[in-house]
Length: 159
Image (cartoon, rainbow, N blue to C red; front, top):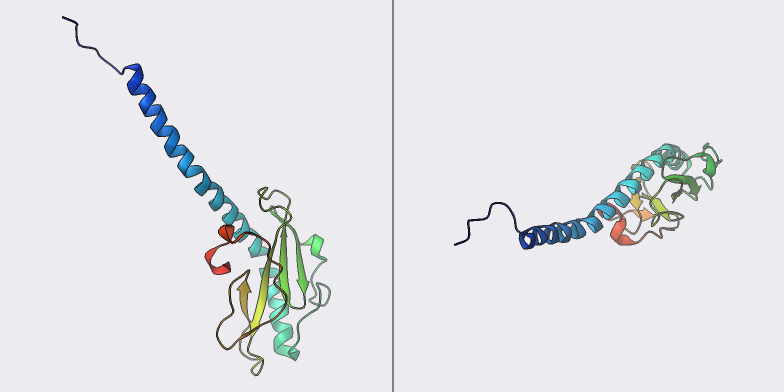
């Protein structure tokens, strides 16, 4: 009669390694999507620099600045961050171009933030529409949407 074995057999060990590998493969895509979304949010924080002057211009004379200089902002390529290469103002819309240390799927991609206004009532605060999202009811979305980031990576409020 054989004595009882202590410890794991080779087959048990292989099963455990296989299960751990499958679980790791399932979590990687989720991790990368979250990483990209976090970088998008980090980049959109730089847009806050431009929101104030654009909204002030609308409240003052019901028009939007045509470019960074008209919004009293530095040149687009001077507004940069870890993942942002440029922040451009064009007819009131803010276009964030990703680059620098951004994820490869985000490099050279653009996210647009467009102002939404009530044209008959300029005292109503400007709302900002991100990416492919639709504007609020009774508000007109101004500017061009140049967003070319796949929707799967965009935060929910930008889809």
